[in-house]
Image (cartoon, one colour):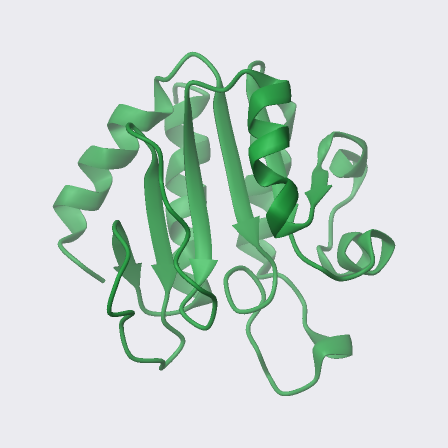
Length: 162
């Protein structure tokens, strides 16, 4: 990971934003790429953390993918939180952001994807999964989907104030 202390400070800051969007790419960001897309599963800790975030007021949580939403929800290992989790294609993320009236976003992407521009106040996290760091883009780098899960766990803890 990049400077862990700096990442935690950034999470402290963004956790207090009035309206938060947490947008995570599925493949390679919250579900490891094991060579079998149909067998990809979100990290258990990620699913648990996203379930907590979905339940919080003024927090919108979205999985970003071009896959069929029902397939992604099944692979997310979510229980009762499915109804609150949003699903968007990458090109629809700005529309969701506007619809939810968010004041800041946490965007977690795979290093295999094109870097996405961040708005002022946003927090970007790129999951490397043994890929080289992107040449462009801003934000923090984490080693793998397990590290991304730990970031989401900390965000959920901070956002709910515990």
